[in-house]
Image (cartoon, rainbow, N blue to C red):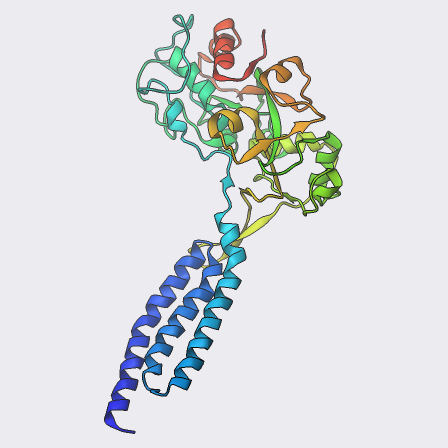
Length: 384
């Protein structure tokens, strides 16, 4: 072998050795980002670079044609293998809680939090009750604070007006880091935790809301009965064809345990067992793989659930459609009349705080002014 070929081989080895760490890092990054489907493409790209350099050693056209065909075939196989993952990764995701809550922050310029047409009959200047709650209810209790509390900036994670989502709000209430939380009713686990910690919860109804199910906007199914919904989430109904849709298997997404919407599903299902939720393998930077409840991905055969106001006012996702339940649309009117069957109250919840203003604040919330804020925000008040 002449020195020229030896030099070429050394050159190829050095280049490939240099590119190997880059390919490995790229592979780790896409894996950690949940894009494992790109790994075959990275491997094929790395090998093709080496193949192209090696091909320079073979001047005969027959060798080049053969290698070109092999490389095209390898790329085609890698793309085919990646297509399902690309489809999955590019489906729109609907998540509870991931919205711009700062748009509703009290006293901010151009805030979306509603205001009263007159000064509030209650004004607090000190010893402000610390508020927390569900994302979907933040617009309400932010407006309460805007009407009653002193004007200043309220950090959503560390102030008298926080927004930490349902599960953490209950934890903050039990630990004394919050005086009042605005949430749907507690889950069995939250009730057990309150009893274990000796907390006597008081639930003050402040409004009514609809629990809603939604599907991809192109799904032809527009209405389900309560029995059909229970059949889907118990795993007894597994294909849309069984409820008047196309012959497609049903992907019934759920929410994490102790979230407000998951607790609502549990209340809705009653004694009917809920099937295990779809999960995703999540790679952590500690090198472990954990199962996490999948966020709703808007496949054409998917179904999910949330609360009406959150989906119609805060998210406004035109790619999904709310289902009728027993033939009734979830609207303010059907919630008010009780015609929509999945309507429930939401609450201001306390647990024995010694803050001196809690009772007066709760009385104001259920007064005409407080209920006016509930209605202006887009919910249905408990007192008409």
